[in-house]
Image 1 (spheres, rainbow, N blue to C red):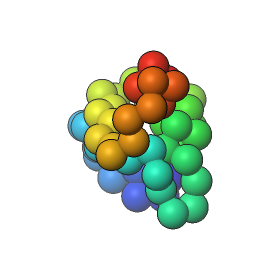
Image 2: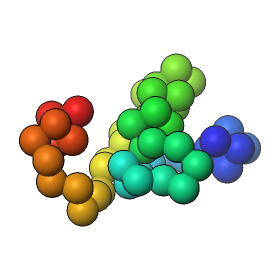
Image 3: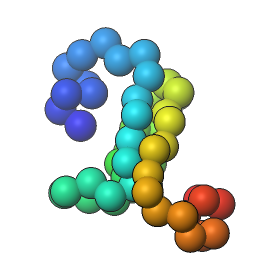
Length: 52
């Protein structure tokens, strides 16, 4: 989050599995601050993850 807030970011690429938190939770935090495009790339393939 620090990297995001201290730099000019025009696109964010996230994985669902992050070391410190869920990529979904991180995305929610970003959405409170910005509407930048976010692209999820992940090896997870469950229907629930895809819909989320």
